[in-house]
Image (cartoon, rainbow, N blue to C red; front, side, top):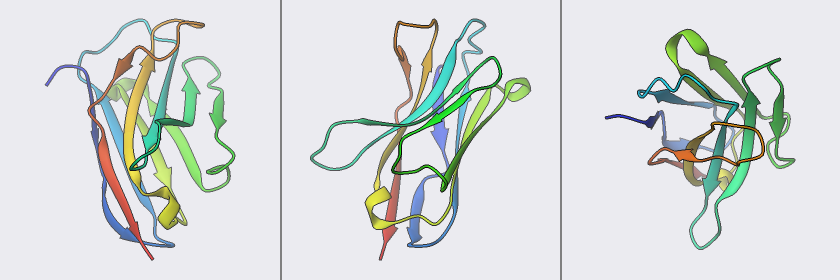
Length: 119
């Protein structure tokens, strides 16, 4: 499968940890940032975290700051999202995305992976 492919989703209990991975099978040579977004049932897709290629600088939504950590492995064309102390409110489909240039937004998307947190 060419493009961004997420893995690592599943069903976990509240308080547990989970790591999502996203591999860029297309090996995009020019990219500015990679990120994670999530969409809960009946809601719009929302930003979770971003990591820029240079720096690397990271950004987080306030709802996950201190609990989630985004990281990248350029040699493996992978971006990971380490989720700790998960909450039922973290239940969503998590999407990996890539921005090819600054100011253009995230223009390449994966298919998503489901994360369900039980209370």
